[in-house]
Amino acid sequence: MYTRTRMVALGAAAVLALAACSSGDGGEDEPEEVDPSAFAEGSTMAALADAGAITIGTKFDQPLFGLKPPSGDPEGFDVEIGKIIAAELGIPEDGIEWVETVSANREPYIEGGQVDIVVATYTINDERKEVISFAGPYYNAGQALMVMSDNEDIMGPDDLAGKNVCSVEGSTPAANIAENYPDAELSLFGAYTDCLEPLRNGQVDVVTTDNVILAGYVSESDEEFKVVGEPFTEEPYGIGLAREDTDFRMWINDVLEEIFEDGRWLEAWNETAGTVLPEPEVPTIDRYEIE
Image 1 (spheres, rainbow, N blue to C red):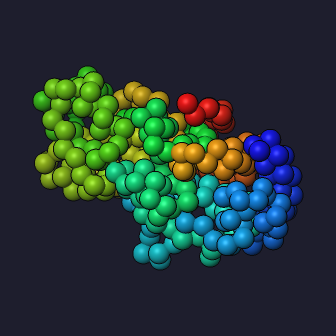
Image 2 (tube, one colour):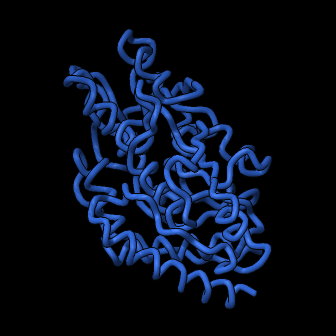
């Protein structure tokens, strides 16, 4: 079943890729119409293409990757990746319902069907693979530390003993601090933006999450914050979806490899996170098997 689905999906993706490339404006044009019968009967791709709608979970508080500004339309690299996936199903931007998924509710929202996919600085790890599955990675980040610009006490994770470290419930950075830096005092909030004011007023000494998320806060802080040291973990970002939906996962992997090759991935990067961060290396897709 997978082979047939993949072959059909690759054909559909190839046609759409040509259409998307022809727009030349970052994929903002309406996507080409997709015949749902191009996908395997009963597949998630066929259902979404037939509905002309998709629900995508993302962060609303992370500059460069997923940020919901006052205008109400989410923006960032994760958002652009979500738009590309939707376009490959023939779904226009106004057919996307964006749902805020904070770190703690991403797996529950996928399991409960509140979202079709999650694109939200979502690190692929074995624990999460027990309840959902991941396409990708589409980007590789790393955990880092952010402090006030005048802080000279913290230069890396070895300086965290006795310091109050702010992170987010359900996040891999928080789990890493708890497991590997037990002498640090961990303060957990619902979203990373909840850490910013405590950092300003001295309630916490340092904020930790992925380097690219922190870079977004630094870029908007008017030199109030700084990132110190080098990333000290590897955080491959994947697209979360239902655990047993292997056909959908492999189809998204096909789409990702297509946009790595045709330039849409880099174009999306350059228009968002790439305005602040250096050009990344193209990731290698992990087509793992579910045990």
